[in-house]
Length: 73
Image 1 (cartoon, rainbow, N blue to C red):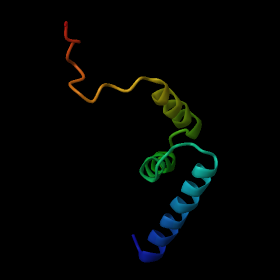
Image 2 (image 1 turned 180 degrees about the vertical axis):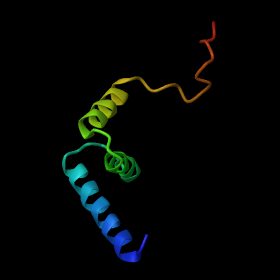
Image 3 (image 1 turned 180 degrees about the horizontal axis):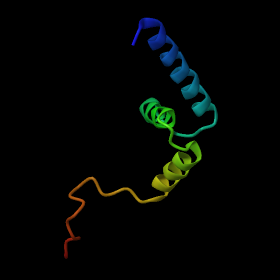
């Protein structure tokens, strides 16, 4: 990527991140970058937004041994 294209891409991501913060989306720069790349590849932005919303609703797995059954006292 030439330096001018890299600068433009970085400025676009900065602007998108700023808008994301104003809208309080909770998305970080890396996540926004991935989502933008997926849109550039032709994925439907509305479908991506629905997936992000769904993933936020699901409980996150326990960081300690996620496949271990609870211990019995």
